[in-house]
Length: 161
Image 1 (tube, rainbow, N blue to C red):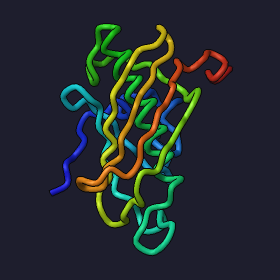
Image 2: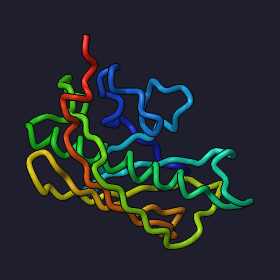
Image 3: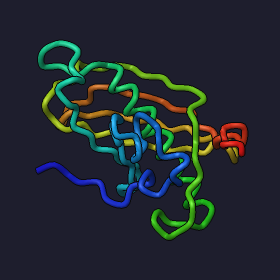
């Protein structure tokens, strides 16, 4: 049975910022990655689609990198939101992050046709900068490791009237 992610941080991003190809709920063509707390870590579960194939039977590495990227920024948003005294879904707007750095190491080929689990460990390194280490598993097999340095989205990214 595939675990379900409920009440993800991405469910609460304001509409102006819910268009990311990886995690934007309003981007019809996107992946719709969704990130939650699970114990001491964060979790995103995603089942690759047929078009995410690199070779028959294996997932395209770019999808894995995208999963690590969005999982990292979503994890940072959850952590800062909680540090600010809020819980996901409490009606307050969560902070948004962008990626300052993305590192991905492919450990083993990622099999296609099974749900992938991204599990993140979060570390604050500055009030506006967070590091998220992520491991991606296909069933019980570690397939990739990644590191995201996520920074609070600058005001210059805000839509101007």
